[in-house]
Image (cartoon, rainbow, N blue to C red; front, side, top):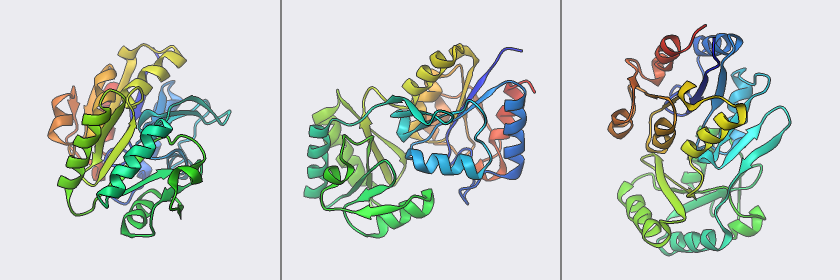
Length: 271
């Protein structure tokens, strides 16, 4: 049997609405890995949050890597080192933060351990309740972080149009250097153009010397499209957006609350 590799998004794909991996899914993934395949959790979340999910769900298998922060980071869980790490250039991050401040738009970033937020408001409380991360408040995000940020995240819980307009401003000014895409309607992910889940998928396949044709990627949102396009087989969840379904080879019948991902695993992986 030739080794295959599954890249799966977390929120809206592997995780249910309670932000958990079901016991049945955990058993199926363990069986898949024990049969000689690989699992790579591939998320827009920051690394500490993805690691917490993996640990709590019992998915930290030997020789595991994780893709975090929308493909900005590829992390080796055994050696506890980054195989790849990209960031938003400091001067661009400073300008985008200023643009958000001009529009009174909430925007946070990340230190190596927590969310760094501009205020202690509903946005950061909502985000951290969903991801299990800690946060600290700072009036100088970049000074607190101490290095170029892995990504920025703008949140508007009531007006998606404001985020769309902000994305347009970013694309107009930095479209050749920065990606700005939605992971859900209230989160606008802002990161280096050379990162992204698709490029991370290619990197990991090359690292493990697995042909892209032996890779499967599963997701539900706009920030998953690049990895679905990069992988040999693209899986869209039943709850995925129309844009994600349009680039899929396989669409699950069930959604993320009913282990829809298991349909693809059972059909596409030998166990």
